[in-house]
Each structure stands twice: as structure tokens, then as C-alpha cells.
Length: 185
Image (tube, rainbow, N blue to C red; front, side, top):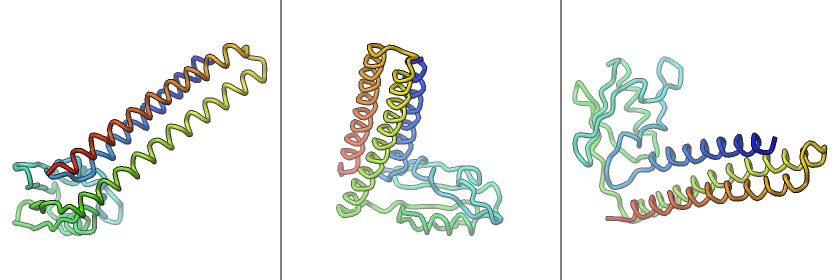
């Protein structure tokens, strides 16, 4: 019973960590990456559609991104979504592909991205802590109902705390790496 609760909590925490990694990858650094565009949605025939489903994204140079729409009729909507995104880019249409030249990050913009990374990290930590609280409530309920002994319940809580600490430390490590990456000129 306790092992099942711990396993489920760890799986959920792993998912939260994976989401945090994806969120950090979408924050722009000095170099262009395709993962920067994962959170952009395009209004495609009235339905919000992820950019990756509408176009291929390639990075031929460090600060150049090429977006080749599968449907040429969607170019205008893709350009609008890119302009309205928080990336601060100006897409240009060269007839076949949408070309984006990433501007060099200013010190102020880098600091803003560090703040954004800290917000994303705190969201991930809160998610992990909420999962810990749910699992602890389940363990406490199992002890109260007599399904497991108090010793087993306290052992389960210690294991839960260790799993939680490991995931929070991993999020902090990701944040530290992202901060270094952002502040590196």
C-alpha cells in the first residue's frame, strides 16, 4: 500500500520535472533552438494549434531560425503568432519559409529571462510539494484506517521526503544551469 503511494507520487514528480525541463528549454538563450517555439500556438482555421504541427523548424545557424509551413496558407497566422509571442522576434517571409534572425540579448532582457526561469522553477517546486502533500495525506489516511502500521507509515513519510528533496534539488539544479546559460555572454 505505502509502496504504491510512493511509486505514484514519484511518477507524478518525474512528470513535473519533465515539464520543468521543457519550460526551461523554451526560454530563449543566446543561441536559437527549435525548443524555443514549443509553447507557441497558432490560430489555424479557428483552432489553437501548436506551431510544430503546422511547420518544420530548423536552425541552420546560431541565431537564424527557418520555419517552413506545411500549408502555405497558414504563413500569415504563423507570422502573427510569432510576433505576438514573448520571444521578441520579427519574422520575415521570403516566399517559401519564414526566416527569423534572433536579436542579440541585452543585459536587461537576460535578467528578465532569469526572472522567468525562477518563476517556472517555483511553479515546478510547488507542483512537487503538492504531490508530496497528497501522498502524505494518503499515507496518514492508511495509518488512521489501520491498513498499515504507524512504523510503516513513518518509514513511508521518510521515503516520501527523500523523493521530494531529490526532485526539488533536481529542479534547483536545472534552474542554476539555465541561469548560467542565460547570463553567459
